[in-house]
Length: 213
Figure 1: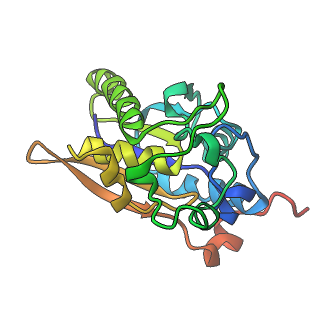
Figure 2: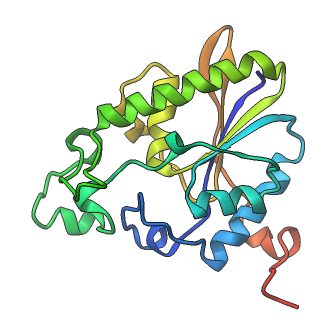
């Protein structure tokens, strides 16, 4: 395998407002769609063997607009289940839990269909994705593998790739519409690029606005 390329989906209304979004299936905003299109030039020189995508609309639309063909929908790439904190911001949570930290405390229990996940459970899911990537890498040769998913899940996956605990995903801030790359150096796992995106100032020339005639 060449590198493991991580893509966080473009902006949604909730990501813009800082609301925790896992199973709520929101579309991209107009800016989010432009962020997704802006990924195309960042991926243009990559040889991609396989693209795995979260089943959410926001991730699938991002992959489509970025020009990633024939993605494989992968349920394990879904975002951290926030349970009772779905749709709630960190500031709102800290009104009643001032010292709350997602990475160490997890989330409040939610409904039966979405009870919430602990950091360890998200880490186990990330390990399963990395195992799938490892199997695919044997067939990929020098080509890259792309994951299109969500901020907190990709941060946990990065921590696990580097041999760190799930909670150490807190070290890796990740913006909407950003590309990161994981690789190796002398056989050791490393970050080769992180949180890269095309500046919005370049959008008018590099990323046509589809809403304009």
